[in-house]
Length: 329
Image (cartoon, rainbow, N blue to C red):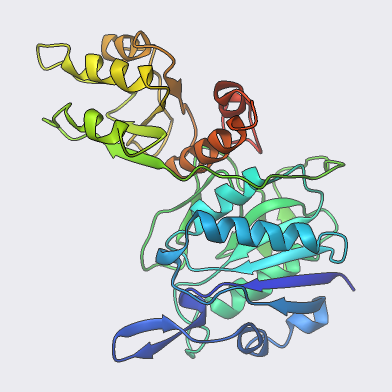
């Protein structure tokens, strides 16, 4: 039997009702006990680094999870991370950059309803996650949820209540889980040697453009962050409002050695800065990077990773533009 390490972190799947609302309370052992069939699929050991609502998960926790995977990599055949849904796509993306070229599966799952309840999606998601992690062909960082296996770099939460909470954006699912067995859509060769990274620069801000936004925001942000992700309109660009202030402020931001990535608020089909005048004018400001087909979650996580590596002399541009697990094309 395959030997799988369960990394329990909290979330809805581990929650119980309190007088303050749902809050994580179930342990890793509680979750496993709710699906005894898992023990027939694989051998499981458990670790619980924290037990929190995923709203509270950020870069510190991503690094902690990655460290657990790295330190126990040779001891286990795969890893299942139980996680809240709200930031699961961010965590999956971050782990995709912190743990690259991994030949073993790192599977994130959770649920829209607690495993503590009678009617819940938690038990199926847990069983599917462990079944996928124990499959010989599985590798890399993926989310397993409502029968879908989604690349960690392509996942986005698109529903707040329905069981099919996650979708793969502009890329096929890896596989479909059917009665505990994966039906693969993608047939890829496993990598040979894993690479683990240990640094993230979390001084990142995502600026969502809204009509009439004041360009003065760039002055404030230049003192607070190392990197800026601009969620622009449509294919991408900045407004001029009959003056060049947005572009002048952006140039000043870049001149301070800051990094800017332009993406789009539109969920699908990505940015295309070279299409319209407003986009080409943005590109003319300097070394503005473009997210293209990347999700916002992957864009944020990759920029944190690239800026973290740049402190060792690496080029942010080269790191950001190099595809990792089909994140950009």
